[in-house]
Amino acid sequence: MKQKTLSHWLIAILIGVGLCGLAVYGALLPILAQDLKATYPEFSNRFWPWLIFLWLTAIPCFAALICGLKIAAEIGADRSFSYKNAKLLKSISLCAATDSAFFFLGNLAFLALNLSHPSVALISCLIVFAGVAIAVAAAVLSHLVEKAARINEENELTI
Image (cartoon, rainbow, N blue to C red):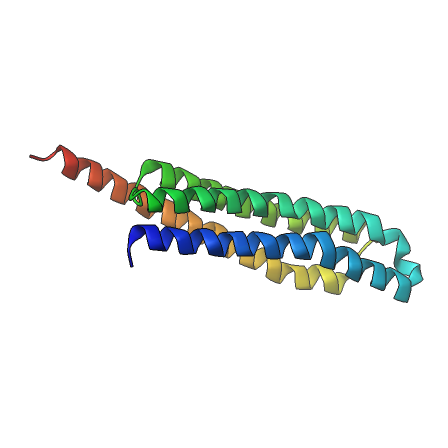
């Protein structure tokens, strides 16, 4: 597969993921929250805090998608192993780690404020684990891309 083709596929996939994220965060979450509020009116005081909290968790996700689009553009320009891509992968790692920590601490805060249930906090640990796994994978990829860029730079200097 050529670099341009790979780049176009990556961009298309990332745009698709972004649109799915917009659908989930913008439409599905509010609809499900309204349904939950109508079914269990005793939880109506939890509607806005949880909805705003979940919307805030989307910010690092979309920031990571933007970094992914920049990486895809670099791949299309045949600069796969560059310091810029290593830095962007490090930014994705930071976004995932920050989002995981924020999500975990937010769940603990809601639990302490009696706005959550212990089972919700336990289940959210799976989401935190996935975020940490993405952060570690992006950090490892960043390290490897940086090493490859360094080797590439040394090879260009060799006559």
